[in-house]
Amino acid sequence: MLMWQFWLILSGLFLIIEIFNVSFLIFWFSLGALVAMAVSFVTSNVIVQASIFLLTSTVLLFATRPFVNKILPKDSFIKTNSNSIEGKIGKVIVDIEPIEGKGQVKINSETWSAKSADNTYISKDTEVIVEKIEGVKAIVKPLVKK
Image 1: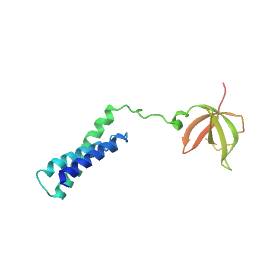
Image 2 (image 1 turned 90 degrees about the horizontal axis):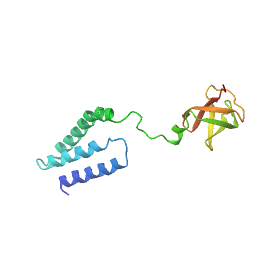
Image 3 (image 1 turned 60 degrees about the vertical axis):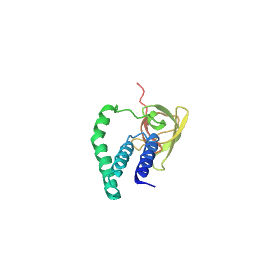
Image 4 (image 1 turned 90 degrees about the vertical axis):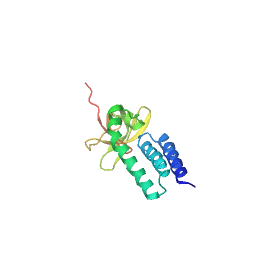
């Protein structure tokens, strides 16, 4: 296999990986591989080609990343199930006991393991509000009714 073919295939692989990755990071390695492919027509030295690949990829990554961050909105991520329940009201279905680490809440017809935000006992059937998610546990506090 000729080196220009290697770099072209590598560039294609990076593009395929980028399709399945939403970080817009691997794209620059694809462009670096294309530049290395162009260099392979000038020199057959693999070390020079690899150096150009790394240098180009790194420069493109650091030079364009701030620009991309300015263009993309700050909250452009898609809320997952765990993010979407923060701030929601739920009901305790299994007593939340901080000492034993037990407790469950039902939020939007889903059952979540839970612990209290201030490490206090919360009894069954108490309405709670989800403050945040830590791993697979909802961190809750009792809802204060007005």
